[in-house]
Amino acid sequence: MGNSLFWLIIGMGLATFLPRMLPLVAFQNFQFPPFLQGVLKNVPYAILGALIFPGVLFIQEELWFGIVGSAIAVILASLGINVVIVVIGSIAVLTVVSLFVSM
Image 1 (tube, rainbow, N blue to C red):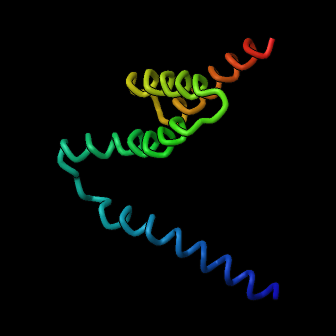
Image 2 (image 1 turned 45 degrees about the vertical axis):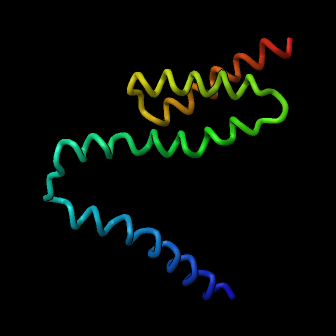
């Protein structure tokens, strides 16, 4: 069992590594047009919005937490801040807000 589990993990690692590595190697010397570069820079923000915004609409308990968190995320994203910082910033603001609400 241990040997097959090892090969299963190796196989899954290759299955996720190869599709990420091959375009990197294939397009290493390729320069994308400026318009396409601009579009690709916005993909993380679009994905973030597509994943999080529907959840905000279906909050059952404290809807305004979702509204505040979304507003902070939109403000930070519009400033051009890194996606990770946008998420961390929204979490930090909601943490502070929840501390004041629970008092």
